Length: 364
View 1 (cartoon, rainbow, N blue to C red):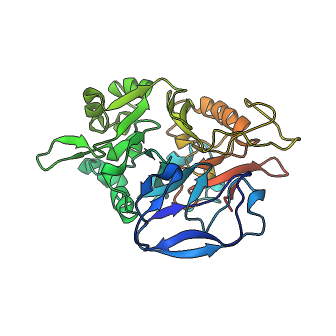
View 2 (view 1 turned 90 degrees about the horizontal axis):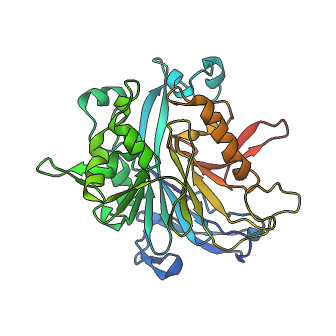
View 3 (view 1 turned 135 degrees about the vertical axis):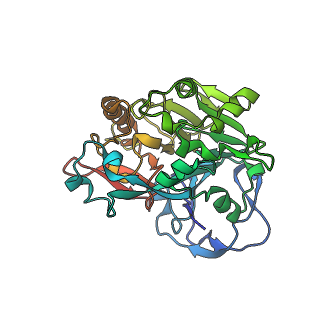
């Protein structure tokens, strides 16, 4: 099972030494998420006890890198597998002599990319951000990208069925981000993979996907979204909407014109900021524990530098400006960044080191 998650608490919650955590557990019964809603047990796991001398000193407190509690929310990352991308395309104008120090390429100059979806349990809803590559690629596309199709298997291994998903959010509509939105039934008809879910995607992205350019037409598969729009099961977003309390979207232009990051604020109660912290866009005396699924603005930890973008970006100069805008809040407020295509480090804190270089630090 390819399941990655963390667990922790923000300042203001007292965590005693000896907190019980779930790690590789086969515990019978159910757990209670925030708000008292029953959630299925994580199958095939073992209980372990975590101790910490100072759990309240950090914004998030991890337990074996298996689950994260962000305020009232529980976050997990599930994989749809990995696939190969041309290294030159993945890093655009960055010379191979530079990017190869961070990412290994095979004899065909291909690098391994992940397909990471974020699962959020709010206590009332189960929200899935991105649905990977899916299982509907053409034979031609399978030759280029393969088709790992592991997401439903990995969700099932954690006790999560398609019917358990209440909300699906797509950052944009490229095939490797919304592939499991739909499946074909036994009669060959395209149907929603998550039958109870309300789907959300950027309106501008859907409008563009109807008439893409020759350059990126291969990135769009209408069966992933058109049936959902036509049936009314997918709501199209302009950017800036709050989908449920604590989960909102924001447009970050660059990879496409209307791609959106998904911002998760795990508590509606403010928490103190250090007196010497830089504050951008928040009241001067507070912030909320926050994570952001930043999608293809920064697909991996190798792309966190301001100028490191992908060759796939339609607006590379806007990618730079959007990164600046993101970091203006994410750095001083210590956001957890979730990476859509990193096959190794699914999420991390991005910080500036003493030399002013961006570094990704694994949540600990």
